[in-house]
Structures are given as structure tokens and as C-alpha cells.
Image (tube, rainbow, N blue to C red; front, side):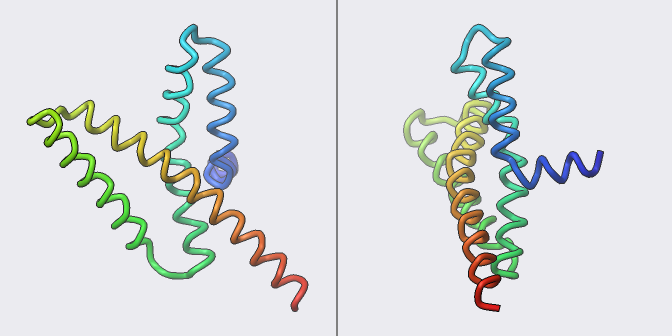
Length: 125
């Protein structure tokens, strides 16, 4: 069980792809299926980004936490400005899906940097 969880955290893109394929196959609404797959894979992307960040830069996660805090504050302010009130479920969904949109490119970028770093270290050493 631990090994499966480790693989899922290491490769969150696989989690997203598997979930999206399964949900699209069994649900009639394909857009809703992709949204559910994205919502379910956010924690996996978050932990993967944190682990890769720590492996590459060996510094804390404070910068990632500050970015996500800023995103949440900005979306809260935008919703308050647009509607004049805050709607919890709608706000949470907007923040959660924005995290997905931010985490996927972060994951891909950090993964590429990690691979290039490992390859250059292998050939230089």
C-alpha cells in the first residue's frame, strides 16, 4: 500500500490521466468527469511539487505556501469584488481548480529541471 501511494505521489500525471480515462468512460458528462479527475489529483500534484522542490533546491516550502496563499487571497478578493459577497463552495472550487492549473506546469517544469540536473551530473561526474 505504501509503495502504491509513493508511486502515485511521484507520478501525479498518471493519476490524473487514469482518473480522467476511467471517469470519461463511465460518466455521460465528459467535462464534469475531467473536472472531478482534476479535483482528485490536486493533492498528488501538491505533494509531488513539494518533494521535487525539496530535492532540487533543498530549501523549505515557504515560497510554495506563499504563492498558494496569495492565489487564495486574490481569488477571495476577486469574488468579493464581483459578487459583493463570499460564497464558500464556489470560492473553494475556484481556488482548488486554480491550484490544479498552477501545479501541473510547476510539476512538469520541476520534473524537467530535475531530469536535466541528473543527466548533467551523471555526464560531468
